[in-house]
Amino acid sequence: MSFRPEPPYQHGQIPQTAILLVNLGTPEAPTPAALRTYLAQFLSDPRVVEIPALIWKPILHGIILRVRPAKSAAKYASIWMREGSPLRVWTERQTKLLQGYLGEAGHRVMVRHAMRYGQPSIAKELDLLKQAGATRVLIVPLYPQYSGATTASVLDDVYRWGLSIRNLPEIRAVNRFHDDEGYINALAERVRHHWQQNGKARKLVMSFHGMPHHTLLKGDPYHCECHKTARLLAHRLGLQANEYVVTFQSRFGRAKWLEPYTEPTLKKLASEGVESVDVVCPGFVADCIETLEEIAMECQAAFLGQGGKTFHYIPCLNDDPAWIRALTGLVERHLQGWPTRPDQYPSSDALEAQRSRANSLGWRG
Image (cartoon, rainbow, N blue to C red; front, side, top):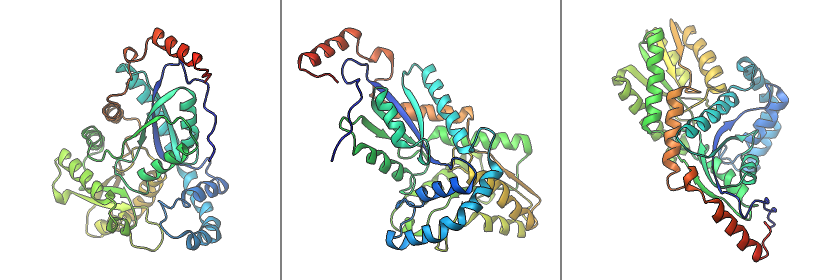
């Protein structure tokens, strides 16, 4: 195995602490070609599709990637923002705001973002951080609830990058924040603000991204963490058990997934005489195709078509100040023990002494 040359900052440069926010990813454009590239990467991840490659690859390349890109491209086009993909737009804003909030708190750190699938890639961003002198990197997957298909996949990519690096930075990761007080508070504020503006619906539907049911049986904690988030949010909002329901969306294929499913539940509620629903997606911290198209469009049409009267989708946390404050607090707790403030970095004299020692030993890094 060969390792790539190290960037020329090794000796005499102030070591930097960095934060890398990571979200799922997005196609580069709402076109069939861009969707084909994106879906090929996404659906080739064995963490996402746990089917043996010899069986899955012919299905993926022979059927799915021939049919699905055009359909998905049309859906993306319906929610595409002027600045680009909503997920990318909101993740970029979260990154800039987090940098600002940390700076106001006295931290001198670098903050960047990456996507697990698509661009900017995790490897590219880690390269840039390393070139900028980062010797410590906190990885923050933007998935509140841990799953092998999401958080673990992000860390797979981080470790894969590390296989080609000689001088690895110190790495930490935030595995989950499903029960983080700041995150729950931000969700509750988001819902309360909606109620203040639009009134309170008869039922609050908390829709989380679905996962195959077998992942629960094999020990993935995702299902349990979704329900804990829901219980904490309901408690913070003062809801009784009959005032909210937990569902799972984005089912793919014919296998059994976590239940109850979101769209059938909404249809059932409407047929039972529930005239108004509010839908919130606590598993997403940024609006994306699954929230803006699947929930706000498809599920709304399903509910109203079944006889429901009022459907409101409550937007994700996005750039809400309460969420950015929560994210700042989460990051600060995971940075403890690392130098992040100017007075914690080596003095110029100490750096010069280090450089002199390195030169005397013939090191020219």
